[in-house]
Length: 263
Image (cartoon, helix red, strand yellow):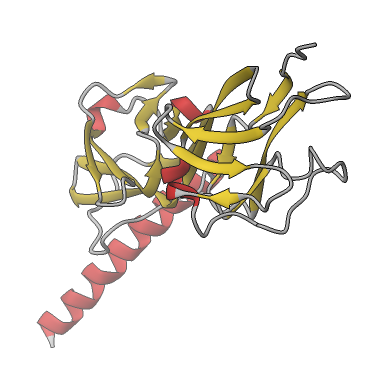
């Protein structure tokens, strides 16, 4: 009597954040009480030519190609002799391991397979949103993040809408990691309130990941000599105090210059 091989379920995490210690890819199958001869469990990466793992009970499993050196060979998911090494425990998965994983369970008389995808994403480093003011009535908003994967999307919002004059520059390094920078020029005439809040939104659409940074701009402030400034949103009465302090500083400098000139 021929007993069919049947995969009950395949478990592959859809999303894995870069830096995760380990992930387990499991292939739960059923071969009946008397499985046919020649039982083999294979895992493939991105197609039938990408064999990365093979187990032929009762031998020890073999790791091949892309996963070599990345698998915990001592990991057993079951105490049953014909199920023990059906799963793969991948250590410190990197973004290069993103793709489709196929489990194939076969004997000499039957075969079954299932495929699932896994995305290892990187939310990035040094996500910053700054202001740079070199001119009295003009401010440059700069938003930057690096070490991102997969391809990111970055947008600067004003009152919930993207700034039309924003320019985005994106680069990819030799490891496939992205750096993205978005800049926008804002004129004081475009700010109709004492201050305006701008939001930089960073997203990885394929990873369903979103993060944001906020900065507040006060029109009319003098240019700054620092490379960039980032202002936290204050209470409204603090804005008037800041303007009063700035005016006092200007009067003090004028007075000192006048004294030096007369002396």
